[in-house]
Length: 223
Ligand SMILES: *Cc1c(COP(=O)(O)O)cnc(C)c1O
Image 1: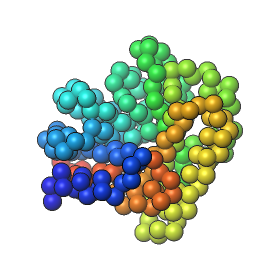
Image 2: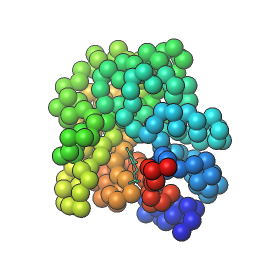
Image 3: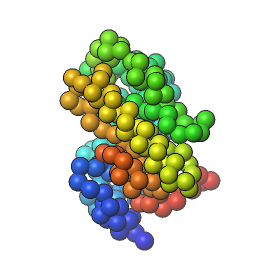
Image 4: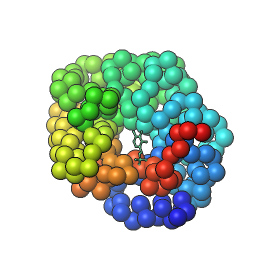
């Protein structure tokens, strides 16, 4: 199956109003260009170095999303061009992004990553940490634009569990939207759903899905 065909199939399953991020990590420029020629403009990467290399060599109208965990000392490399940072998982990282954004005089769109999975390995804020955020803290970060939340469900075949986790995230999103972000019209993005669970995520209110292997094929981490 070609990348263009895969992309078309995925798009047919995504309602209008839900944004598709094509997760191109580990895949080369040729694969990305195939999706690009089929009309895709939003791509997601999870490593800073790979992201900057691809930005340097691929068409400039691509919107690059950083979807992975990021170390503070790497933030500066993507600040000049990144369209959306999904994986902001600590206040410290927000402060670093704010500082680097200020240097470039660029307000950086961010999503706060929430830890919803039952796994230890997933990064993110706990729901309680976010509910306790103060508007004072947010106001001190003028160079970050918090546009919503991102989360990953537990890696499991148990669809009921995945659904419950996404439901929890959507509920938290609604609470924050009505609470601390009630004067932030741009707080609209709920990034949840990957190849195996994006249909469940959309049913639970996702507005942005991050799909990799169903478009580009399985990733080969051995080369
Ligand atoms: C790799 C990755 C994806 C895409 O995963 P697939 O299962 O290949 O669709 C989505 N989100 C994040 C954060 C990822 O790291």
